[in-house]
Length: 315
Image 1 (cartoon, rainbow, N blue to C red):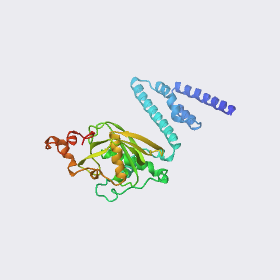
Image 2: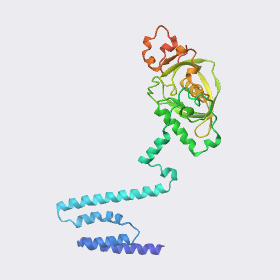
Image 3: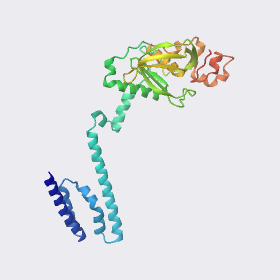
Image 4: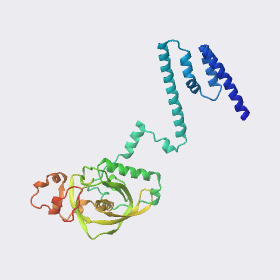
């Protein structure tokens, strides 16, 4: 191997010296022919050779100032094209070594359309028969299937698309005990709410709840245009499984506890209008913006002074 490598180096050196001499004597045709032969008969690609000697070619083959500028521009263009070709070859080689699902994840119009179709969901509304049924637990086989993570992505996408701060799987026709919640800053439906990181809960259950309660004007993607003044425990301990299949338990307080209880109700077929104590605590969304016109303490002193996304200790 060493002898073969040494022989190749010698041959290249001889060809290189000959090529340089031809360049100096301005025998362009023979020089380019030798360069072509050099590139075709050895492992080094011709574009790399041309790029290496393009400064010499540009300097020696041009006699006037104007032609010098033209040739240099051409040389740079060829050099850039060669660099681009090399990067493309390297990218293709790396992509070929990736798993199939990763190498096929490039963004193309066709892929975007397919993704949009997969992620397109239809909200289910109050009165939907299946929405108002108790949902079955997620099985271990389903959690280990390839489609499970995609279902979670679809659920998250639907929550963001519809401007929710939480969403349960049955609301988009996924009939399992799954929900997620999280709040980004400046959510228009809950302007007073602070940011909450996104979390997924699979087969969740409340293992403890506080005796102390609070109230909130709740809304729901499945009950559009309405708000309800709902009482719930201030704190809960929620147990379940996360998106990675790991058992988890969390002590939730304040708005997080509120959202978790609301979404858990969905998994049992319960929507917030069923939680209001009286019909007067169920109002149109538009009415929340004109509360100064409400009479007296209607519907109650606590509900009258509490904004969207805020909690109140009194009714």
